[in-house]
Length: 118
Image (tube, rainbow, N blue to C red):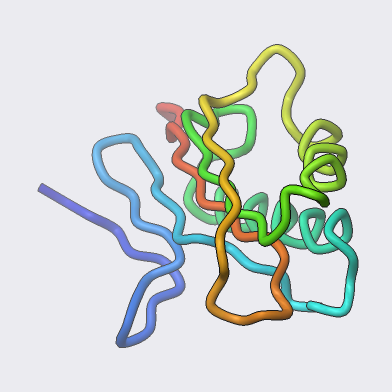
């Protein structure tokens, strides 16, 4: 059994690839001064980069978990999400309101995707 880990430190990896599936850690924005839409766009761009490094892309998403700090801003997150997700290929998704590790973060997203065969 082979597992490949990407962007690891002593605590965690940002991605792990096993048996044709890439699992990403929860991604948060780098610029927490942005509004919900801006933070979501940052997170989705990070997801794009991590998936590409693991040999996948948003076209191969299987599932997504989304945490937002306020359902009052849920529509802003969905606006960014809807512009990003591949039409006709939306993953299964759960989205909940939660307190995140840092109070300035408004959104965290974790995805799983297939790695297409070469």
